Image (cartoon, rainbow, N blue to C red; front, side, top):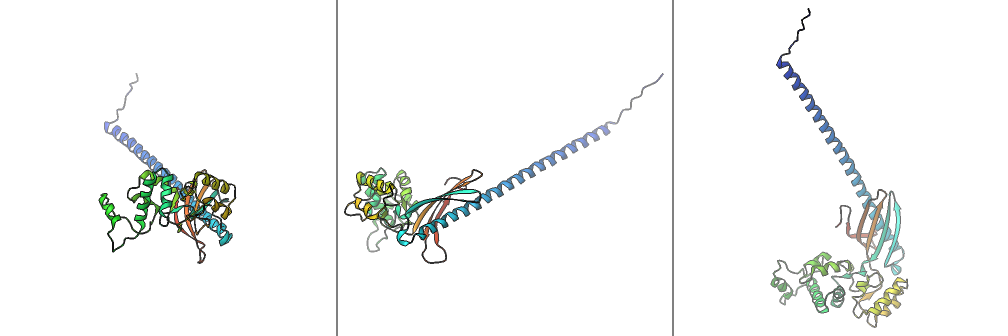
Amino acid sequence: MTVLRHRILPSTARTSDGFIVVAVLWILGALATLASIYAVYVINTATSMSVNDDRLQAEALVTAALELTAYRVTAAGTDNRPSRGEFLFRQGNANVAVEFKSETGRIDLNMAPKELLAGLFSGLGAKYSDAEFYADRIIGWRAPSDPDRPNDEASAYRAAGLAYAPRQAPFAHVGELTLVLGLPPFLVERAMPFVTVFSGHAEINILAAAPEVVAAVPGMTPERLYALLSRRGAGQQNAQSLQSLLGSDPASVMVEPGKAMRVAVRVDFDNRRQVRAEAVILLLEDGDAPFRVLSWRDDFDGPD
């Protein structure tokens, strides 16, 4: 007769084996976590390098667009400079669309007369009496104070409870329009696409100006505006022909492009990423560089 004997392991041995299994599982889990973290790091690094590469390319392409614009404008000669234009080019892995306009097509906040400023605000929806008030406040903001007279403009800001006074010097940026006493924010927002501080002229260039700006010219009527825009759109840009449509006193208009150009650039990468940029350049007749950048903004990191 065979007797079966069972060997019973001590409980301490089973506990030790279980601890080893748990420790191994923890180590494997930690290694898996480290591997995941490293993979995420590698992916983020590659993405960051790709984004940085796109940014460098976008900046280079916008710079190239500005250089080509300066060349196209200056190559025509001082007397034949175009007031506006557009062109396309391809470089590397992107297509670039460029549109340029003379900055004299906008109303200069530091130079424009009261009538032109009032005409703009009236055309944008303000009552003419209110538009004249807004124009006076803009002129009051930019006009220097007279030390021999009471500073009524600064007193008006204090009376309105504002914690600042008017600059009483030229606008440094069109954004300062939001600080001018009494101007409604919605009206300022509407005016932004039509004003500048880079023109340097009291007049506006009717060859480059938007219809809203041309409509602000003193004495402009709907009939004259329609006729002028029709001739301009058909390519009939003879200066005398267009100025004759404005009546006997076209003192607020000009046809010279000036030295400042606003350049809008759209970069379309082959990877479907699109970057938009806008810059204002000042053409230089003397010096080592053909132009100087006065302002630059782009939407590479998102909308402004």
